[in-house]
Image (cartoon, rainbow, N blue to C red):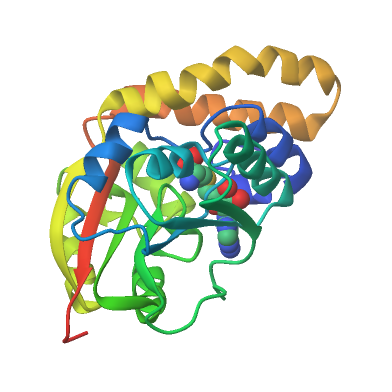
Length: 260
Ligand code: SAH
């Protein structure tokens, strides 16, 4: 059987955690892009409450804390990632403002209107962009912001191979204009959107993976699941290099309006 289009979700969770916790980011992104997205958000103060949903080991959570006032709660499903964030926050002296907590994005531990900002890089796809935007809105104040990255098509048509790959991996991938319309329908006024540069995928995501894969494979020699996981990630990287004109991550930043 071919593993070609195997989704990451089909692999053993503990192996995935081990694999991804050894790199700084668990998805495409960069400090520069986090800071750029933050530049579109007004009105944060030391009293602001921010949630970073699907924070992973907190690469972007730390950058947020270094560049925005307020307190930040990072939420992730996996304790190993949350431990990584808390350790990073302590090391950087940010633990009075940054806390990692295990939680599920489908039942976030916040009250209505409690948050000033919801951040989520490379993670909202886990419950789906449209569902996430709709369900998380009630946690935000009117005038609060959401900032998420999401896989998006850059063109209206694309080669079959990459179309099929994404329809298997994440059928909700869509064009930027359709994603913006979904954001509007969910009760946010789009404030900005921009595509992530290739370096977010290559230098910050695939290159660090390529560097650690030989070690990971050595540690799990003969383990078919580990081999499949690496093969899967390598195939994803190859597809990215081949088809990066057709898709990528886009940062969508919206402001909660009265009408949603
Ligand atoms: N924001 C980080 C991690 C992105 S990877 C970065 O950009 O580097 C996606 C993250 O979502 C992973 O850490 C994964 O553990 C987390 N995740 C997946 N499903 C989740 C869920 N249902 N609730 C909370 N976190 C989830």
